[in-house]
Amino acid sequence: MRDVSEGVGGMREEHDALGVKQVPEGALYGIQTARARENFAISGLPPRAELVGGIVTVKKAAAQINAELGVLSAEKAAAIVAAADEVLGGLHLDQFVVDPFQAGAGTSHNMNANEVLANRANEILADAQAGGARAVSVRGTYAPVHPNDDVNHGQSSNDAIPTAIRIALQQPGARLSSELARLQHELEVKAREFDHILKSARTHLQDAVPIRLGQEFAAYAASVRKARGRVELALAEARALSIGGTAAGTGLNAHPQFGALMVERLSVLTGMEFSAAPDRIQATMSLDDLVALSAALRGTALSLIQIANDLRLLSSGPRTGLAEIVLPAVQPGSSIMPGKVNPVMAEMLDMVCFHVVGADAAVAMAGQAGQLEINVMTPLVAWELLFSLEILANGVAAFTDRCVSGIVADEEQCRHWSERSLGLATALNPTIGYEQAAEVAKEAFASGKTVPEVVLERGILSADELVEKLDPAALTEPHE
Image 1: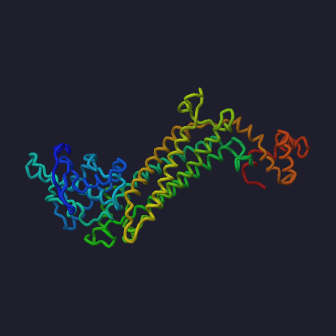
Image 2: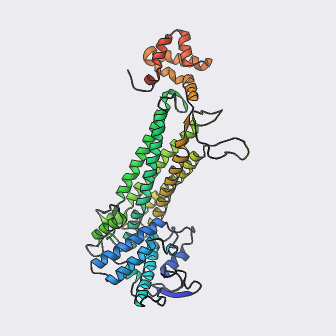
Image 3: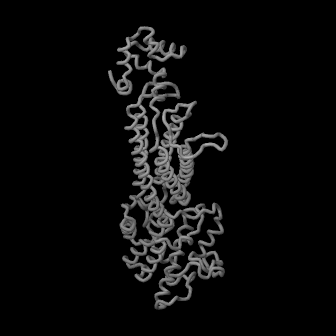
């Protein structure tokens, strides 16, 4: 197998419709990729590995299908497939070099893949013809395998890149779903563990009716479950592919059977169940399914922010806050205050989620930016969605393992606040009426006494009656 660095230091000359340009001799990419590198030196970021895998998988499937349809020779197809398998096996990834912020529609991403696979396919063919001896370098000659005519046969950037994006999203999306399921499970474990602990609910950050700590954690688990369902639904919608539509969704220059066969082959190659977009023209002009996925990620992030911030509030203190729960101490919290421990995992999750919310704004702007038969903002959408999926999955995993699973309840502190809560007066409404209950709450607040103390002092209820009315089970479940 050739070393992609051979000939480094020299240059070769290639030409395209704009003229002639020097390309590094050792590069598997060609002139169009070289132009893109110069034009789009924007972020210094490489393309996402998942997107590279997606587009190379499209090229592999296309070579196979085109050969089966008789529009590409078996010899060329085999060489393209062999080159694609090398990339999918982890080789030549340094040859995918186009910045994520680039030409619209991902044309540069597409041509980068076409040139790398064409050059490598030609080397494979040349080496085979040399009978095992290393052939003279053929990089940049694009014969017999051509980037556009052969690797890109039956395709356009306008259907190949959107298809690659949807392939690329599935595994990271499945990982996020798995991590959300783990977080949901750990919250449910805590809900059961804390279910007997009575505490004060708080609405508007003020005293409210009693609630069990386990009920709070069960609600957090339900929020995660709902968010996970929305993500999975959006991922499923994004498995409809526009491949075969070529430039405008009409299928010009593609074999009539190409699109349907590509969907079947991509499903086999990836182990995922893809389908053909019902209307390839609509799927070419619109990114609505990707916008929906981004919105699902935003909704997930917002739910996680609420959970993380609630845990920060519930653990605040430990002497001057609510201190109803204790979060695991994973690192010192201050460079100046000895012994201080901060809720760093919840803070981390907040920052991750803030970024995801911002990325959704970028995707939304990209989603509305299409004109007529094409939305050209696919490179941005690909980057933002793939990065959001990665950091959200990583953030949730760390939060689950290093925070939620180690939470401990301070039952005594929960009882202390529940007994002092003015919200206890609400439980007396059915017995003594709203007006008298309000008077009890006002006196308790003014005197610093608890609601039960005021009720007993006023002789409104006996001690036995009060115990019955303020039973934890009765206070936290519907009853007449």
